[in-house]
Image (cartoon, rainbow, N blue to C red; front, side, top):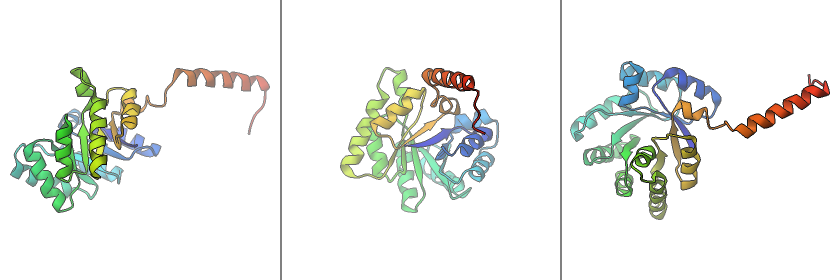
Length: 217
């Protein structure tokens, strides 16, 4: 599974890019607002830090304006992925962009039907929001599994990007359900490696090693 970081904070991206685990970056209007910076400037800086996919979202809701904004975004850097809402206008724009070789990420997906349409429109990624489904007592992982079954059955190349990750279990559950990518907040990424038994076991190893009086160096 690929790991994308879901942020517009440059320091977080640099930290995880240096770790060797990062496969891409996703942003959205809310994350741009949180950063307090100009969107085009932020996207350009992110693309200077990583050469992997960077999702940048259009602000328009209507097809023609989406297309114009997409052209601006794609020209920022070769690794920009244009992020579009999973609406009829977003799907129409996706088809136009796919026809000219522009990579896209269809966001705010909440149904298998939406995912099917995104694949038919030539989307590079589809982003089902699993956490928001869980918020209304629906199982987001069932959506991941349904999309995987559809895509596998028809050999669609669109990658499933699990979004709205709220907890560490969402990452492993999405991997088991067949997601190709998880986009994860930095705070959750740092928790993936943590386990109390690892800490307890390491504490014991250190104590026993110190008792030997030995040194490896």
